[in-house]
Length: 553
Image: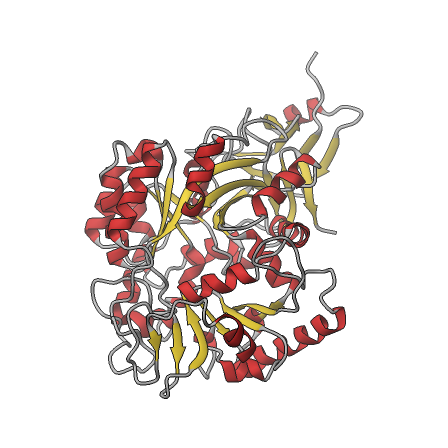
């Protein structure tokens, strides 16, 4: 006798998103797996006394979304600290930070996410933190400075992180406390005499303006890194946010953080509502080798939701900070006092160091993934991968791939390297937007999803938390500023499901709806194939490992 299902979703439009994409009326789940998909009559034969049956009322059921590049604790920080993504001017950002400062002062460093310490012990310090501002959307398009943030507080340390996390603004308290720890090579001045490192922006008199990038931002990250208790609170908040948007798995990029420990704590306690693949920063490579953790350890059985992913590294910076490494100068660099001295951006990890890291990690059996935005950086990563034995089998990845040349796309396909990209970045690619200012006509050659897919490149979608939201990404990818690069709805959905699963060696159990696959599902109120605004489609239910982890009231 066939055992009854735990959960049945019926009267639905179930898309397998396989090849081809098939549609069915119902799906049955038992012990965390899909056990039947097909006609409602056939699936409902598995209904037992304790089966939960959900009448979807014609709603669309898809495989759960996998965010292939995220920083989940940063989502939590925006929820707990000041969310500057809502600001439409420097003045509004300052006001949001003032509100947060009042909360910090009232809490006196108490629980609820105020504490931060560089040693990760949870010792609480009265930091006023804000995340996610994007000056490119403001009429007064400029970074937040020391003068702005001194107006928030002259006694508490204040940091405002730009959305890309490559640039931040700090007040005088932070400068007084940490200036000696920040890299001092490359002090930017209003006269544009900065060295290529470009780490601390300064005014015409050489005094820091409070705008810091790259290496100096790393100092701030370490100084404000949450302890274990606060990290758990951030992850809980972030996973609730993610599952409400249909996310069932994340590839989290982790550096010097208590997050891996917290993920495993929550998993053991049965409180983790997402599959988490941890891509560890290259700083952790020796430690991972020492304890015997390799790519794909963990996450292979029901209830085991945490797995080891790739070794992660930077190569360059960002377009927003003019630190992405290009082969040709930035369109707005010449004569701009805030531009870096090297008008083609900068190396965060230079090509030689990158080659050594890739050879070392690949030789030890690790998957590699490298941040590369500019065309010069993308070429450097592909050159390093090309020196390994079999980059395709290792599923080495390039994160972002924003300005890839024709030759680079061909090399992606030849090497079998995964392109892990973020379609929500297209919000900056419209005429008059940030990429237009930074790149000029090259903006239409960014994020070449159609060319990558047509060349046979494995395409994985993620958000980089800017913002986290798969349906926003699908919407933008299907309406690219360059129409020649737009994807179909099915192609875009696959990049957020089976494509992301492939990037994590999980394509056999995740990313499609089929018998034997993990029961990671999302129920949408509307069909993304039949709406004019995919980003506005509401999520009704999210299921992870057979458990309903989100259900809209």
